[in-house]
Image (cartoon, rainbow, N blue to C red; front, side):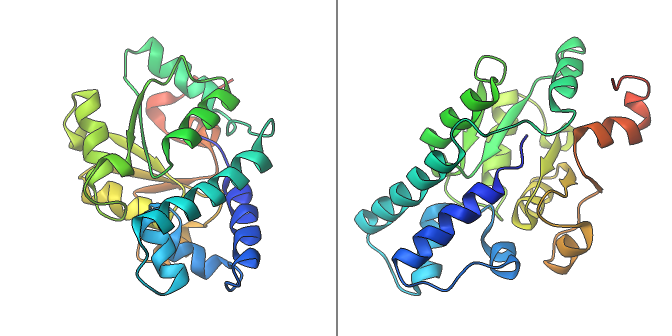
Amino acid sequence: MLDNMSFHAQAFGVFAERHGLPPFDLAVRARLDGKRNRDIFPILFERTLSEVEIASFSEEKERLYRELSRGRLQPLRGLERFLELLEERGIPVAIATSAPAPNVVHTLSGLGLAERVRLVARSDQVARGKPFPDVFLAAARLLEVDPARCLAFEDAPLGVVAARAAGMTCVAITTSFSREAMLGAGAEPHAAVADFAEYLETHAEWAGTER
């Protein structure tokens, strides 16, 4: 929906410096982007963390993200047109995200989509986070649609793996990782595009709808 990973990277950079952790690079992000915070922080700190520690670290990092991104979030090119077309055709939309609830509210509000996208499945509401398919399966249940009939858009390798494990067709958005980088991280999207405008332009079923 948006390219907000630079804000997350900045937030993690500040967090890592505060806590004496190694800086993030793209290789680390390929292993962690898309995971839940409860799964990320034990990896970063290389030890088992208590629930209190996980909650504290998560709130610290996500508060940094919201502060850094406030008023600066922009939808990916073509997103609003794509949503219009889906609405015109009666095709429902749901979000399957590893973001905590405050970030979902922050992001949808920042994009002006809070009233248009109401179905949200979060990884903290399911048993397992990405790369397991649980959150995508939960999104399909919200949509009341067979996962095999769902089209998922993902910008992280672990998300691609999760969507495909759910049985969905998955299009990679290459805002952070190229298709080659996705493949190198073990993810195999069915297609890859820079944004939603490119998706509309390159898929025949939407021919002539871009503007």
